[in-house]
Length: 290
Image (cartoon, rainbow, N blue to C red; front, side, top):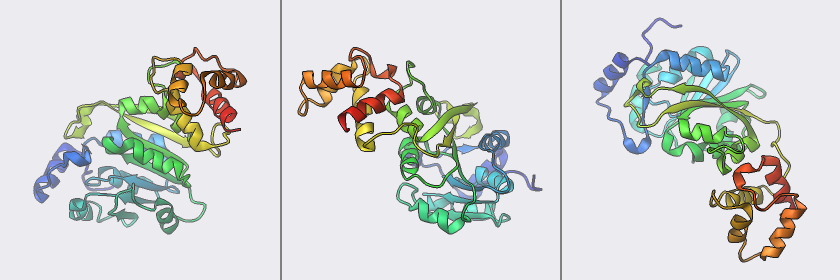
């Protein structure tokens, strides 16, 4: 551990906020972490070591960035809020293994930035306290881009973490669970109280760990169609698969034609979407797009 007082404490955070007259922007979902133990736990769950390169999104005033810099080989952080530039310059000045990219990660060419900053063959992981309002778009963009990431470990809203890691026949299981698990092995590794944030969010938080798969969990003929079909099957959760499919494919297939597709996939149309495994969804999608 380094000599100076960590950023992630209530006093140090308030001191920096006051010094720079910084005010939180609600629209950017800014909630800074003020507990070093939580940050250390996140890095343990992510298995960050001195050989690993790390990408961070939304460094804020650098509380997590600092801990990553101490434990990893190097860190590249994306920050959308230019107002934080002078703060980050001060808080991270003694770390020469940190680069800040002032860009919205949703618009950035992350693949090029990885190539530019990390060595070929180096293990790169994503570790972040994500702004809650854009968690899903950010994670889906990164997963669909098939970036050379080994894993993703993120602090997000507990409810979203539960949905991403959910299994069939549970309330949280839905199209998001399938989209995330198609690319990764997902698990919720830590629950985090509201008290470790400034300002405190109104929702509970959790750390989600995604281990990137070498290849998608199931084989599908047409990925876009597969995800579209999955969303359709969860269109109205209380309705049967048959009803959701009839509603979705109303212009393309008759009820009878859909019934034949379900039979071909060996799936009972009276079941609900939440009872199907990802493999069953793949089988059904492949019957349509075979």
